[in-house]
Image (cartoon, rainbow, N blue to C red; front, side, top):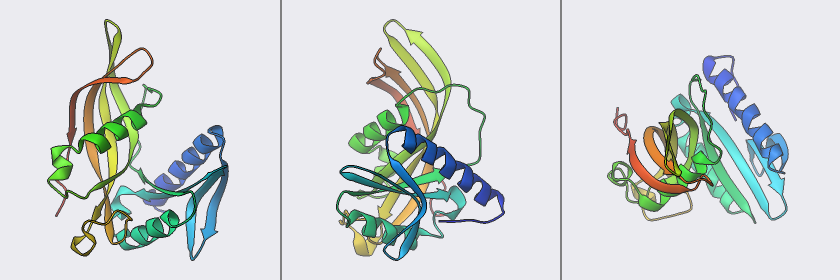
Length: 205
């Protein structure tokens, strides 16, 4: 949880409100700043058989709070039916085009294919989510829709001491810009990834 009067705090608050509304529409019972264990989380969303815990960070605060995030993730994943989700709140952009489900389509593809840019950073990298998808171009090609644009991929990277673990302990959290061009069928299912690149140049700066 992070609250302050700066731009970072403003972006954080906007993203939390956006997520809460989306989760309510998905049938979750949503609580704000809900205490669990020794932590207080931005959002706790519940429905039968699932407890989704969401922590929102602005891009500039990810690294500073990496240890706390790792500990939060570990705690949530120890709960029955617990799922931890990290969401990055980037600076606002003008958006005109939305494609339903595209964030999940991109997340699944990146998680399954482990793009070289991420694999070169760490073989044990975990994809936490794709956020803030900004579709800048739509084209129709026969029975396909071609969508191109930008997004952010949130990841967790195990440090040397935690290498090989999958529970998030000791992980460092970060996010990177992603550019894509994909083809979707009439049901908006992925049929082809024409291009996808992730900019990891900021690592180590």
